Amino acid sequence: MEFIFGRDPATCRLKITVEGKTLLWGDPNSVDNSVSRQHLKLEVNDDGTKVLTNINPANATKLNGNAIIKKKFELDDNTVVELGMNGYKFKLNEIVKKFIKETVSIGHLKQVIDGYRKAKLDMQIGERKQNAMRGLMPVFMALAGVVGFTDILEGPIKILPSVLLLLLSGYFGYVGFVSASRNPLKGAELDQNFRNKYVCPKCGHSLNGEYSDLLNAGQCPWCHTRFKE
Image (tube, rainbow, N blue to C red; front, side, top):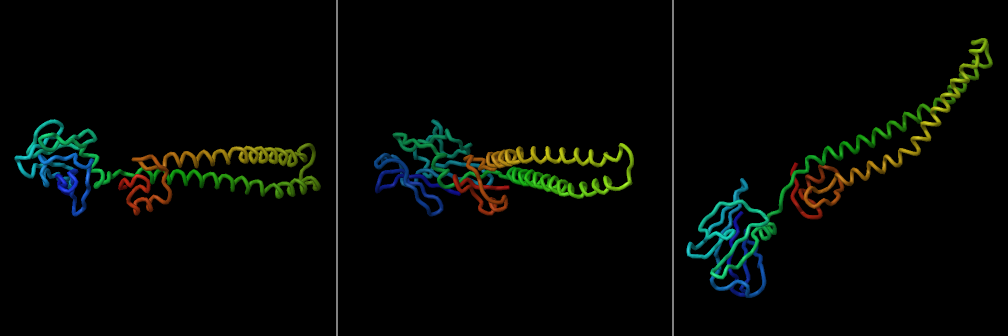
């Protein structure tokens, strides 16, 4: 991608042209005649390297306080460019970000959503198992009744089925009470933890939808940072 920086003659503002798109920067009359109409070129290459070049070597241009003709450099939020004899200053990265959106990896979000769904499924399976066991209680009661009214068992052990039934009833009743108390809180905690982690790595806003949908959309709906796996 190639950026051309220069003075807009109509407004005397900084004019930036990128692939047919134009942006005017700064206040009117802030850029004097020592800045030419095509003053500086910025090349942003596919490998991430960045090069600044004076279109006319006679142009006065500084990068972070140092005069340049052509310079390969690292771009960050503190990169300052000065144009012209009077040193019209601007932070280069603020302009570049208007045209090139940052790309971040969201591969970790697949683990977040998969882990959340597995935890939810495990909770549901646990609840169904408990319900199934409680559903067997009538069968145990029937068996205890049969034993109690027959001579299958004799003596003191004849009350054993009833004791076991009483213990099972107490156990399942306790487990059901604990589950009814804890599961809603556990579910709410899982939901909150998921919302805290399933967020844009750049702006921190919560994201919605499948992981594949996020990749297909290609960018954050809030800050428009580009997504990659």
